Image (cartoon, rainbow, N blue to C red):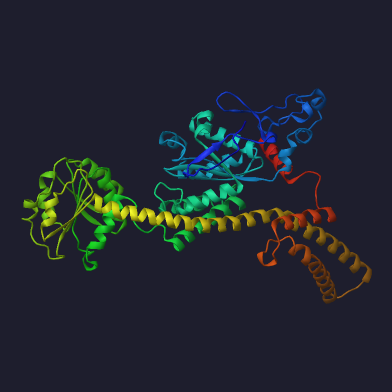
Amino acid sequence: MVVVSSGLSNSGVLHNLSYAPSHLRTDLKPGGVRRSVSVTGPGCVNPRCEAALERNGDVGSPSVLRSSSVSALEALKISAGDRYTKERSSLMVIGLSFHTAPVDIREKLSIPEAQLPQTISELCALNHIEEAAVLSTCNRMEIYVVALSQHRGVKEVTEWMSKVSGVPVSEISEHQFLLYNKDATKHLFEVSAGLDSLILGEGQILSQVKHVVKVAQGVPGFDRKISGLFKHAITVGKRVRTETKISSGSVSVSSAAVELAQMKIPESSYASVRVLVVGAGKMGKLVIKHLVAKGCTEMLVVNRTEDKVDAIRDEFKNVEIVYQPFSRLLSCASESDVIFTCTASETPLFLKEQVETFPTLTSQSQRLFIDISVPRNVESRVSDLETARVYNVDDLKEVVEANKEDRLRKASEAQLIISEEVQEFEAWKDSLETVPTLKKLRAYAERIRASEFEKCIEKMGDLTKKQKVAIHGLSKGIVNRLLEGPMQHLRSDETEGRSLDEILENMHALNRIFGLDTEISILEEKIRSKMEKAKI
């Protein structure tokens, strides 16, 4: 069997499905590597565009491949491979995320921003890939493509991922998820809206989706469907955040601590408030990060060593971070308005008797202690002082949990928006199927008009320039009026109330009536083009 799709389980984790209809099945080598039956011998299909000969049990039949005059495209037609030339292009995502793969796998597959244009070019050079884009972040590596064949596209992309990363195909297949067409669209919209993030509703991912568009714009292969998908995803991400406010409210202890401090400090004191962070470990760094995000540009950091503080300084170069050793803890705290404590100390760092000796503040009535350490760094008795106010991690957890519940409610609202936007995008994408017919019909009519116009001019003899312009305008007007109805019935317009099936039926009817179909399908032309390029 071959993995053909994946979906969201009730837990929201993406799982691979290993069922495929019989007409899509192919054998698997040990380790999950797909094995296709290759066409060999004279006149065979390019190995990178191999076809599996299964029809009527004549796999590899000499009668099929006997003649050296059999072209690659003819081999496709007479084999079961012609199903690839008859199917429509598929939009799909081949990805790994924190849901499905550990960080040691994800980091090997990550694509640096500077390599994005080259990556798109390499992906689109694969035989069955028309368009491509890559969303590579610390939590996910997802490749979005428009493919001429679903399972051949997956095979080629997965092998490419293995080649550039050094991770075996079997290992990538074990951790990857695959989504097609509408499911792929829905997934990117959820990602952009922050619904698939580690922290529900976080805003950074929307910026990362925007950055893909910025970097990839103009790169060959980042074309109409993929470009349209990512641009629509940006619109969805903005709409979800605007209409649901899903990003509001802290959902981590460190961000809640900073938000709480901001709420308790008088607005008039924002510019002059003196901030002290005790501890520069993981939690301390997160507190500093959220302080910077809230506009804090100066702070004291007390830590046992300076190396961690130096690393934080390197990350936030525009912020004045002053290091002080632990021996100066009490003197630094006595000069601060807000103190965040986040160390692993097993004994309290601040006792009531110590805080009691601190000078009275002039900027606010109480010195604010926000203690997010376990065990606590601030003795509980400190809260008995009129000059101090203490919040511990339990106080913050209530805020965090309330905000998480609120975000889950907003996520349900967001899903309604996403469903609506998916439907709109899919209608737009499907309407593109009629574009070639629209162009061919107009070109067909224009050829007839131009030919008849020239015959008319020859028959009428000497005409003034004004008369010729009038006849030309008349011929144009007649053609435009005649085409108005057929063109309208090929366009996806919600006000007309036509379904996509009806539009596609109209397209096929016009193709038959006016003989707009060519001998080979559009996908066949694309495969021929790919194969010709491969020879160069």
